[in-house]
Structures are given as C-alpha cells and as structure tokens.
Image (cartoon, rainbow, N blue to C red; front, side, top):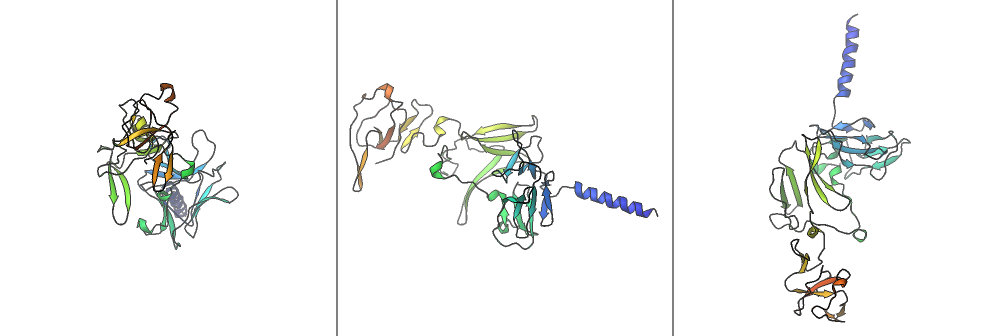
Length: 327
C-alpha cells in the first residue's frame, strides 16, 4: 500500500523540521547536551557549551548568535569547568537549572525565589536567561534571571581603581565623555521603588558590549559588520586623572597641569611625617613644620603629601600628589 511509505516519509520529515528548528525554551522534560543549543526568538543570542580560546575546558554560556566571532556574554560554570563534552543541562521540577558532569554530579546550579509549579527556562532576545512559570511573561514574577547574578569582591581584598562618581542631573561626574551619541541613549532612574542607570541601543540590531580589562580599564566595543570584528568605540578611564583616589581626599587632578595633583581651595599640603593625634573632639597637628623650599627634589617621589584644612599659607608646589584626610 503506497500510503504507508508516504506516512513514514512525512513522519521523518516532521522529525527533521522539529530538530532543525531552533527553540528558545526548555521545560523539565528536555535536556541541553554538549552540541545542542537554544536560540533567542530573534536569533540575537545562543546558549550552549563552548571552549574559549587558549583553553581545553568546556563551559555553559551565552554568546552572540549573529556574529562570526564567538563572544561569550555570560558563563555559568566559570569556577567549575568541564574537562570533556559530557555536560548536560536540565531544569528540575523545583525550577532549578542544573549542570551535570559525566558522573551525574551537579557542578553548577541556579537558585529560585519561589516554589515552582510548571517551570520553563527561556533565553530572551536581551540575552537574559530566565526561569519562570510557563505562560507568565511578567519579569517581576520570574523565579531566576542570569542578569541578576552579580559577583562582589571583598573591600578588604580589592583596590578600587576607578569610579563613575555621582549623578549630577546630566551625567556622572567621573564620565565627562558620556554625551548623546548615535549608538545608545542613557538615563538615570530614581523613584520611590528603584534606583538604576540604563543604556538603550538606538538600533536593536547593533551589537554593543562593555568589557572590564585585567588592568582595570572599562572598554566599550561596537561590532563592525564591514570588518567582522569588534571596534574599540571608547575607553572610559582614558587618562591618569581618572584613576580612583589618585590625588586623595580634598585633592583635585588636572591632566593639563604638572604635577597633575593639587589641593582644593581652602586646603593645603602637609607631609606624611606630620601626624595627627586625637584630642577630644579635635585633631591637633604635632611634630615638625616645613619651611618653603625645605623639601629636596630627590625626596619628592618618596614623600606622600596630604591635603588638610587650610590653617596657614604654606604651599608646596613641587609636590607630585596629595593624599590623606581632612582634619
């Protein structure tokens, strides 16, 4: 009977279409194995396993789906890489995304903000991987989001190199180059419910990313279709004056001056040798005083100077920096 082979052919064709058609969602009955991916609805982002350059390890991550250079934007198991292609990702009935190794052990897991009933995991065109209840598109009800993962460094173990400064109504005081541009718009939202800063691409097809380098610079990169490469659009901290705390409290940095550091009006230079002792509610200066011209030039690189409240007229114009705190 001719219709039986035809039905088999149609069934096989259906399977091919189903497996070839990308999906952006998995449920508790589905898995993502090494070699499989899910793709956001618009094809902007892709999630799966990858190996970075100069590495043999395998990672679960999200990368841009429409550019030729694989560029990861999120990595799940950064601290626990796989050493083979046996990794499997599944969604549990409790709404947890878990990454399993060859032995079936969990090497990475998401968390959840509430008990799940019918959870699904979806990769959005924003690049956000979201675990939510099926059919609920309200992001505020999501059980977990990859965008909300923030890694904090202990203050005692890290040195701040750069900060944007406070918002002055038009921009951040430490970002003088933040101005209207053809690539993105920006806004600072401050209301009774939330405080945040947001940048929005003018053209959704544009690929734009910010990268913090190992030396503390923040680079803004734009994907160029013509060259098939990332173009360095801007570097946030481009000169020495944008280094965090370069001139210390009460100091001011001017890149076109030499030395670049000076004290704010109402403050003066003192040296590290001039200690301060608590005397009730006041701090009094003890030890030695310096006469104008009394600091030898060969001592300048070793001498750290502090800006303190102006109580005399002495200034040391030869100083290379001012550090310390106000009396």
